[in-house]
Amino acid sequence: MNARIEPSLLGKMSERQVLRVLQANGPLSRAELARECGLSAPAVSRAVAALLRAGLIEEIAEPQATGGRPALRLQPARDRAQVLGIAVDADRCYLVSAGLDGRLHDNSFTITTPKSYSALLTALTRQARQLMDRPGMTTLGIGLSLPGLIDYRAQRSVLSPNLPFTNGHTPARDLADRLGTECLLLQESHALCLAEQHHGEARGLADFAMLDVHTGMGLGVVSGGRLLTGHTGMAGELGHVTVVPDGLRCGCGNVGCLETVANDTSLARRVALKINRPVTIEEVIHLARSGTIDLSAEFEDVARYLAIAVAAVINLFNPTRLFIHGRMFEADASLFARVEALAAQRALRPSFQDCKLVRATGSKSQGAIAGIIHHLTSSLVPALESNSLCFPSEVRHALPAT
Ligand SMILES: [Zn+2]
Image (cartoon, rainbow, N blue to C red; front, side, top):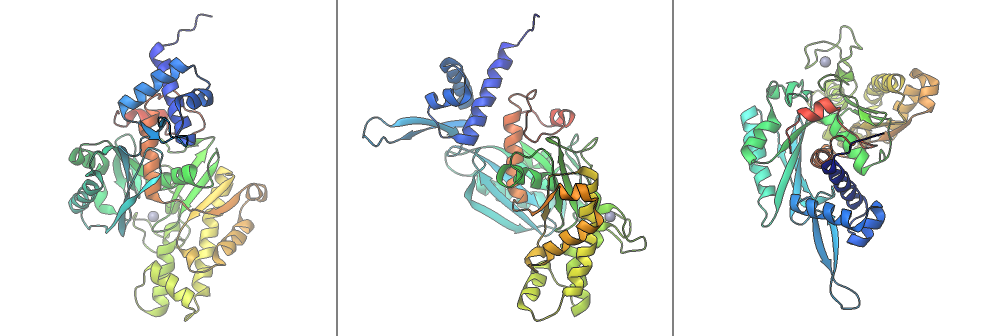
């Protein structure tokens, strides 16, 4: 067989491999790197030179214990190159920076989410510039996590029930224009999936799901190693499935959606009715922990509906882990187990037994970091996708080129 292999593609495959090994095990010397990659010394040298030129890795000098010449080791860029992660929530925005190894730097910002699109862009630009303005530091890209429906092809916010002023806008492209660096838009449930895959219990898992029940209800599903996005990126909107036919009006325009009854926001609304004043989820946590008021009926009500959502995800997608991201579990230590017990009654038994429910530990800003690193490093060799979480090719190819 006369298979034709492009020399440039071969070069990029070794670059990708070198980068992956350094992300997993760096810092390493060139000799260690060649051993770990199973590549020849010249192939490693070529890949290292290309990655150094691209600013994706850096060389550090480590003093020898014997006092001889310092040993040169390679690691993903961290001291001279960074990426930013921005998570826009309905109430607050979080900004962090990290090296290409994904480890966060010390500096971060939290701001109140502005009430208009132009004010949001202005505030994010100002805070991002503060993270970018570090002497000798290059910012390679920004990951931006956003709630609601996102069209990945167009990089556009389509319908955000909890941040409606972003509808129709392309915040990642607008930020990229203002800041002069690449910016990638990520749906927030997808960002949480990436955070769990890179930093949490989903590492190495090919089938897992993420249910985010903080402000609305987002669902991210990784099946067979691929993130399910649907045609343009809008799949997974379990939160807008009707469960109360004549229920409360939802931000999407429908009534009685799951996210009107089974998240942190709806728990706070129930508690507000009980005490006759508006409360935030933070106050609910404080009230519940102080024990001054009995909220067991409110917790039970939200648990019943959340269990319906959990059972639906298990029945539909047969994940090995289902991560749940929400603050309500901080209010009552027994709530998670109660949701689990109720979901066990509703889900199909074999699927439920196959799945472990886990409280999510990652953050959306961490996921935004993982997303932009993945995007920057994957574009080295778009044809090669093994076990790592990836966007469908038609979506990835529609993303801005690096
Ligand atoms: Zn809805």
